[in-house]
Length: 79
Image (cartoon, rainbow, N blue to C red):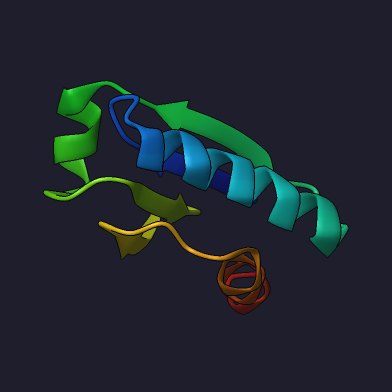
Protein backbone atom coordinates (compact mmCIF):
# COMPACT_ATOMS: atom_id res chain seq x y z
CA UNK A 1 0.00 0.00 0.00
CA UNK A 2 1.27 3.46 -0.90
CA UNK A 3 0.04 6.47 1.06
CA UNK A 4 0.85 10.00 -0.05
CA UNK A 5 0.33 13.17 1.96
CA UNK A 6 -0.05 16.13 -0.39
CA UNK A 7 0.96 19.54 0.88
CA UNK A 8 3.58 22.22 0.70
CA UNK A 9 4.67 22.05 4.33
CA UNK A 10 1.96 23.91 6.25
CA UNK A 11 1.12 22.97 9.83
CA UNK A 12 -1.97 21.01 8.75
CA UNK A 13 0.12 18.98 6.29
CA UNK A 14 2.67 18.10 8.97
CA UNK A 15 -0.12 17.18 11.38
CA UNK A 16 -1.76 14.89 8.82
CA UNK A 17 1.59 13.21 8.16
CA UNK A 18 1.96 12.45 11.89
CA UNK A 19 -1.63 11.15 12.05
CA UNK A 20 -1.06 8.88 9.04
CA UNK A 21 2.13 7.45 10.57
CA UNK A 22 0.29 6.72 13.81
CA UNK A 23 -2.65 5.13 11.98
CA UNK A 24 -0.36 2.90 9.90
CA UNK A 25 1.47 1.80 13.05
CA UNK A 26 -1.86 0.95 14.74
CA UNK A 27 -3.12 -0.89 11.65
CA UNK A 28 -0.25 -3.36 11.66
CA UNK A 29 -0.17 -3.18 7.86
CA UNK A 30 2.82 -2.37 5.71
CA UNK A 31 2.52 0.96 3.92
CA UNK A 32 4.95 3.15 2.05
CA UNK A 33 4.34 6.71 3.27
CA UNK A 34 5.48 9.58 1.07
CA UNK A 35 5.19 13.33 1.68
CA UNK A 36 4.57 15.11 -1.62
CA UNK A 37 5.37 18.83 -1.62
CA UNK A 38 5.89 19.32 -5.37
CA UNK A 39 3.03 21.61 -6.43
CA UNK A 40 3.02 20.14 -9.97
CA UNK A 41 2.51 16.60 -8.64
CA UNK A 42 -0.19 17.84 -6.25
CA UNK A 43 -1.97 19.49 -9.18
CA UNK A 44 -1.78 16.22 -11.16
CA UNK A 45 -4.11 14.77 -8.51
CA UNK A 46 -6.42 17.77 -9.07
CA UNK A 47 -6.21 18.69 -5.39
CA UNK A 48 -6.92 22.38 -4.84
CA UNK A 49 -7.07 22.34 -1.04
CA UNK A 50 -4.31 20.82 1.06
CA UNK A 51 -3.59 18.70 2.92
CA UNK A 52 -4.54 15.88 0.62
CA UNK A 53 -4.43 12.17 1.33
CA UNK A 54 -3.89 9.64 -1.44
CA UNK A 55 -4.04 5.88 -0.94
CA UNK A 56 -2.85 3.72 -3.84
CA UNK A 57 -3.17 6.61 -6.32
CA UNK A 58 -6.74 7.45 -5.23
CA UNK A 59 -7.49 10.79 -3.55
CA UNK A 60 -9.45 9.96 -0.39
CA UNK A 61 -9.40 13.31 1.45
CA UNK A 62 -8.59 16.97 0.79
CA UNK A 63 -8.55 20.16 2.79
CA UNK A 64 -8.71 18.79 6.30
CA UNK A 65 -6.75 16.98 8.97
CA UNK A 66 -8.27 13.58 9.61
CA UNK A 67 -8.29 11.78 12.95
CA UNK A 68 -6.31 8.57 13.48
CA UNK A 69 -9.60 6.63 13.45
CA UNK A 70 -10.65 8.19 10.11
CA UNK A 71 -7.30 7.30 8.54
CA UNK A 72 -7.52 3.76 9.92
CA UNK A 73 -10.96 3.41 8.35
CA UNK A 74 -9.63 4.62 4.98
CA UNK A 75 -6.66 2.24 5.18
CA UNK A 76 -8.95 -0.71 5.93
CA UNK A 77 -11.37 0.28 3.15
CA UNK A 78 -8.55 0.43 0.61
CA UNK A 79 -6.76 -2.85 1.39
